Structures are given as structure tokens and as C-alpha cells.
Image (cartoon, rainbow, N blue to C red; front, side, top):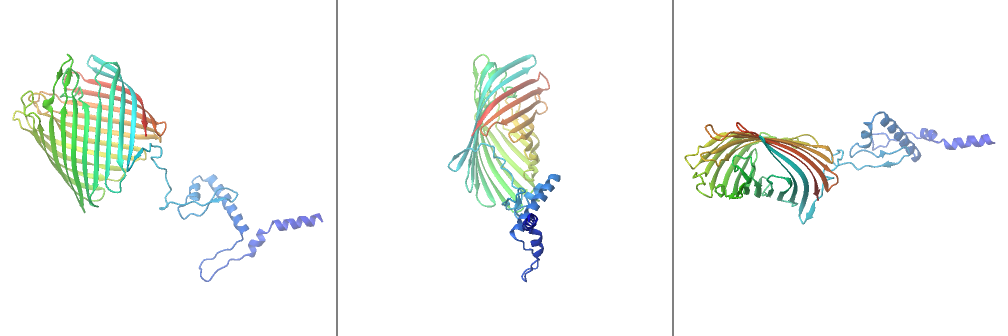
Length: 479
């Protein structure tokens, strides 16, 4: 009797093979494909088998996980375990794997109506050593910095205001402080689909560097320079042709320098206004390659017709360039141009300054989280030395920003400036090399730890070189 009960239980517990064989494929008249109808118990068993097969495949091939779980928007339910539980995924619109927001760990900013303000307050402790020949000077100082960005969130047009300022206070040693303040505003006007206008305004204050050729020798505190700027521009797309025009105005105002004997020296004879009009026309070979021609005309007028040495330093400047714009998206973009520029002074005793110009700027991102910048610029720097017109100034700069981790960023920068005076000039050519490195660690979304080192070397044909080394560490509070 017991054996009969065992045989009956086994028959009740094993219906699947018999049931599966009892059901044959069913084909309808409206379908060309054949489908097999299974009862619910059979479907559950099939899902369990699929889950076990997927687990075994994943164990031998790690890459198989992606094909099982992420097959795009048309993928079926994903099996999570061997117990038959499933979780249907909602795919992306374009079928691509979704990625995390790169700014998820950044400070969100402060909402002010239709604007977003992102302020940052920094405090650092720095030590600086300056050495010229046998002379050596060192100082330790605290540097407080405040910067921020105010950006509009409008459906059309955009206003962006950026500001930055640093203030230094010596806490040990001797040396001149170097305060800096800078504010820039830019309004982009979306006039039409093919036309964009731009209005700009700015202000910058800085102290003249003691190694600058125009600096006052022996001054304990160099002159402060106020620079005001205004600008307007328009760009229009004419199909394969692109045209732009802009007007820039700058105002330079120089403060007094403090001499070592306690007196001051006024430098108001260097105050001047400068204006430039620039036009450009480009031909679109492709969206990524646009050759262009550019021409500019400018004029600089000093407040005083003659400086304290009796020279009339107002001048006219003319420049022409030919180059190409490159736009390969986030990977590579920028432009390079070659040209010629000349400055013609009103005073016949001052020689005109002319020379070949090289200008370029490129941004390259070889991989996500890494940005390489490179630039070359050419300009003319008027002189304040008696009988000297000025120098043709070439500057080369490069920089690297790399995310070692999502919260740890390394920075490298390198700059070389070369001042070339005309032949026969009493002033010597000058080279200035500046290299710096730094790290930023975002401990939280609002607090970052920073460290920086910098080295600057100023060299001339004769005389000792000036070397400045600086190291600093600080905290930055962001919102």
C-alpha cells in the first residue's frame, strides 16, 4: 500500500514532460510564424532555465552581462536571479547606455530668478622667494580670493557675468603685494537663426610687475593699472560664407608709484584710450574647416599730447591676418592665423614698429576628463623709455587639466613671453618663462582643498636673471 502511494505522488509531481508533449504548435491563418502555447507552469520553468543559463554564461564571460541586461529599448525583461523574479527596464530613446551627469558632484549654485549664481571664496597661505643676482627677498602672505559666475537661463539671448578678485596681506618677510580685480559681462543677442550680436563690458585692476620693462626702477610699490573695456560685435551666416565685425574700446589709467624714499611718482602721462575695428570673412569648406581673412584698424590717443620726456606717443595701428578655423566638436577646436601688423607713431623721432604676427588657440580633449590648451599671440607693447617706440611681443602658452579621479584634478601650465625690440634700440630683448602646477581635491560638493607651486624666470642679454618661486595651499568654499 505504501508503494502505491509513492507511485501516485511521483506521478502528480511530474506532469511537465507529459503536458509539454501533449501540446503541439498552433498556427493561425493570419500569421506566417509558428508559436508554441505553453501553460503558466511551463513558462515559469522556461524562465528559470534561462536565468540559470545566463548565470553560467556570465561566470565564464564577464562581457555577457552587458548583452543580457542592456540590449536597448526593445530588450525584453531582464532576469535577476534563479527564483524567476524579473525587472523590466525602460531603455533610452536612442538605444544608448545612459551615463551619469558629469556635474553631479559640482556645487549647484544659487537660483536668483532667471539667473544662477555660482560663487567661490578661497583662502590660502603662500610663501614666495625672489632672487636677483646676489639679492634675495622672501615673504609669507595670506591671499583671499572671491570669484563668481552669474548666468541667465532665458529661452533666447544669454547674459554672463564673471568676476574675480584677490587680496594679499604679508604675515612675514618683505615684498610688494599683488592685488587683482577683474569683472567681465557679455550679452549674446540671438537676432535671428543666422545672425548673432554681442555686447561686452569689463574692468580689470592689477599692479605692474617689477620685471616689466616699463616698471619704475627702485620703486617699493609699482603703479596700479585700471583697464576699462567696451565692445560690440555681430556675426552672420550667409550659407557657405560667414561674416563678422566688431568694435573694441579700452581705457588705461595708471596710478602713482611709491619710491623707496617714501615719495610718489605720478604716471598719468601714460593714460590713454585705444579703439579697434575688426572685420572677418570666412568660407565654409565644411562645418569643421573654415578658412578666413581678417583686417583691423586701430588708434590710440594719450590724454597728454606729450609725455614727461617730451615725446608724442599716440599711434595708429593696422593689421591683416589669414587663417583657418577648426571645429571637430569637443575633441578639438580652435584657430590659427598668420599676418602682419604695424604701429605708426605721431612723433617722427619714434620709429614705427612692424612685424610678422602668429596667433592661434586650440582646445584638445584626448579623453574624457582631460583638456589640453595651446595658444600663441602677437602684440605690440609701447615703451616709456626716451627715444624708444616699444617692442613686438610674442607669447606662447600651454595648459593641461586632468581628472585623476572624479574629485581630484591636476593642473599644469607653461608660458613663455618674448619681447623683441627693433634693431638699434637701447633696450634689450627680454624672455619671461612661467611654469606652474596644482591639485584640487573636492572633499565635498562645497569644499575643496588646493595646492599650487609656481616658478618664474626673467632673462635679458646682460644683467642677472630674476627668479621667483612660490608655493601655496588653501581651501575653497563653493556654493
